[in-house]
Image 1: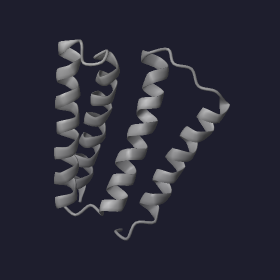
Image 2: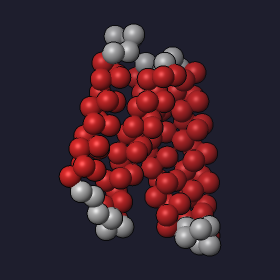
Image 3: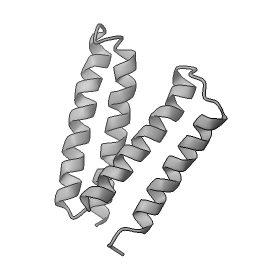
Length: 110
């Protein structure tokens, strides 16, 4: 199961790289970030698929992947792109993180 979670972590990192590169590609007008978008998303789906084949529950894996990816992209946007977030945004990020933890705690594997 450790391999499955490592693949899930790789899927999350790949998706975050792809999403950050999407912003940097400026509508796919910059070649290098566009390549990172394609490689990032392709890597994310391959790693997620392999993680599922190694025994991850689809609901838990997708919830963790989507939740962590969303939270990480929002946090990275603050630091890399000087995006702003108000108190409600921070509460929302905290709720995403709490939701991911609760989803994992409630999964059927031990």
